[in-house]
Image (tube, rainbow, N blue to C red; front, top):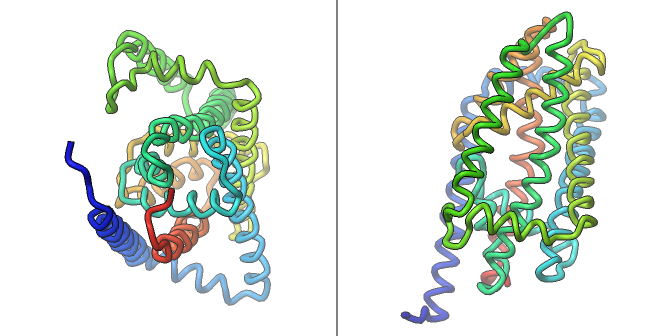
Length: 315
């Protein structure tokens, strides 16, 4: 096996940072250049007297969301190696920045693994997946409840046929995963059976903590969406909003998306779902755009700064 020199690693790390920063810059520029309509509408909204106070509320809720994500990551990563909240904060934002160029941001797994010594990286990837899967579990649970409520509602968004058909497809996928549970997936030694055995050995307390932070995050960014929607002029009760937002997050979580289509998919699904309640398209597009700006662009820009100022590969 050929040993890699320190200089080679150093220059490789610099090159990796450069690639990530270039891709992030292109991602943000590309999205902003395609959002002229939303930006013009938001600019008109900022002319109102109360707009800056409300924007402060939006930023506060988005910050709480990322603080919860940071603590969740710190809880998971500390099972391998203890890290401070500040370190977890920087790692979370840098991983977000690095993952923007990957489908469904799967690059976050590799990015977070790079912050730790090679001997810990497989476990870090597993704990990263534990944190992500706990969030996905909450999304699926809440989305299923939203689908059920919608299927029984007078103003049905999702038909019972769609609901039961989706449930059937899910069961088929789970069946295939069980059938090929001993086969390695993507990484050598990472078969579903081995991964399941690893997670079974994790404490109930850890799973409860991860799920608790995931639930708090879910309520936080759902509340942010609802507040922005109301401030922009949308008219919905909480009971009307619940099935729509839970179905929205479920659909955008399971639909594969690439970096250049992420916001497009979210916008399209959101416009369709909220159209059942006669909410103007521009209000929905403005809400989606601001959610994206607060929860992706601002954290990614901060993550880019952290990445730029890192002198050596984090360990």
